[in-house]
Image 1 (cartoon, each protein chain N blue to C red):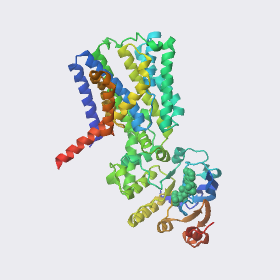
Image 2: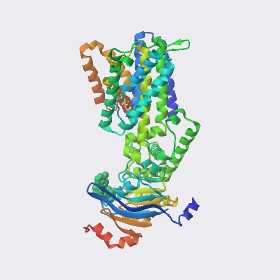
Image 3: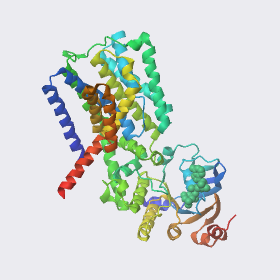
Image 4: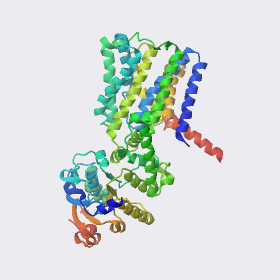
Length: 264
Length: 318
Ligand SMILES: Nc1ncnc2c1ncn2[C@@H]1O[C@H](COP(=O)(O)OP(=O)(O)OP(=O)(O)O)[C@@H](O)[C@H]1O
Ligand SMILES: [Mg+2]
């Protein structure tokens, strides 16, 4: 893992977006957006409500197909790839509105997160072949380790829907990590968290980067975004209006305008 | 706390009850009733995997029940093939048809999936009725041979009862193992949120198809056992009403519960027998009972009774 950390200096982009556009009927949610994400960095993606941030996530993860433009992930195009194929290739995400499997336990949520990392099929589950038993055992160990990472190990057997909201966000983060992502997309992970929880989240995000995971972070909480991000991209009405270091972007006039609502 | 341990105890308990029942009950009518409960449990168990766990509805499962029954009837009578070879054939044919039907229909969801499977069930039912050269048509198919295995004949009510319940126990174990595995967790994640399941990497369309095919296999097994129990089958047994009855067993017993399938099948098999005395009001009382279960125990019998039990335990502790 330490070698990987050093290797991240000779950067080739993990994700490259090239003039990507997506519209819904007459709404141009994303218009000709280009950027790239360097391996092992945290990039903040900000912009007013309706700017197209979540839509961009849905394009990267294969939920939506772009109307035009190219996306290259890990040296290969993502064109026409199915969602689960992209998850297997290492793109994982959390949701703006927490979306857990509420009737399942905390541990089971993480195990579902490992779906692409495990193989047991129907026959394997019926006959319990030794390698399937071993796989299940390992998956549970991994899941417990992830729960420890976010501090929820004591609640492994609780129904996930019964957790307090802040913990649900943490669980969702752990579930996203269960897929062993190279690229992690976080959609407003601090929304609804209090100050203490937000600070803890910031620490977790930094720790995740140390494992050479590339992170794209959508977040309205500027104190969090500006402190953890290596780079900021600003979106407004589907268009990228600025990109740069946090302090550069904060001083950018177009950005200030967009946030004050004087555009158009 | 240790789940697998409790499961094992539950299996042993069911096996013990089955064996004891077989020894104690000698009335042929009761034995046959219990055998029917077993057959219906297999039907409900298969559909419960699809409805309760994967959250997909099928209003055409009687078709697979019928395919199992007609396949073994045709193979054993017209082609004089041993029933024990007809059994895997019946299951495989039902699975193949489920696969072919499942690929386009499972792309549908909600009401549309219901409509799609309903239409499929009707087509198969019409086929049983109209393809008389092979199926015997509306008047039915007679002369299905009894089962025997070496020196053991299953022509007696008691042996057939044991045979059916042996299959039920095996099926319970199979379902339990699937549900507690990666596959089962994938299925339950679809039930909780299909879009989210897909987003975290679950291959939802493949899983739905697999469980649809699996439930068809259970139904075909039930159809096989039915055919060799009564020796005579007719299209009426595998019509739309039967599909609805299987759905009702799952809902009444309790979705996403293996024991629910057992309970639902028992209730729906026994009710009509108890209600004979109401003669023309039979269906009215039947409907009323089902309605009250749904009103007072909307989660089905299993969950509902468990809730009542837990509540009474809590109030005792106070
Ligand atoms: N599935 C959809 N169908 C139609 N329109 C959509 C869809 N998803 C997003 N939009 C529209 O695209 C635009 C961008 O929405 P998006 O959710 O990407 O914004 P956002 O930047 O995530 O905003 P927020 O900060 O409120 O989450 C909005 O005008 C929205 O109404
Ligand atoms: Mg959004």
